[in-house]
Amino acid sequence: MEAKLRICDCPYCLLFKELPEGTILHYPKDKVDIDKVEFIIIDCKDCKLPMVVYGEHVTEITREAYGRILFRCKLLFGADAMLKDKHRVVQDHFSIHKIGKF
Image (cartoon, rainbow, N blue to C red; front, side):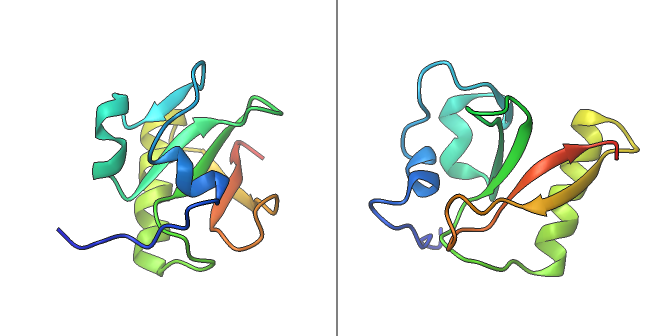
């Protein structure tokens, strides 16, 4: 298995090591599988809406990776689910903060 780029003090990278107690995890279904997936979908601790966090410390992802994220969101939240707005709390880590029907 290929090593993933993670940064020690990045709050998003840390999610893949230890998910805080009480965090609602939409994908994967089980916490033990977090390190095996490309991205996770959790509820934002502040606004309580689902958000995607990519599993590597990168600012951009491929079109194919974006497609896999969108596909998973549609499976979880309905065929009309859309992705909107990159999350900018952690400026140098790719995440999508808004998943919903806009």
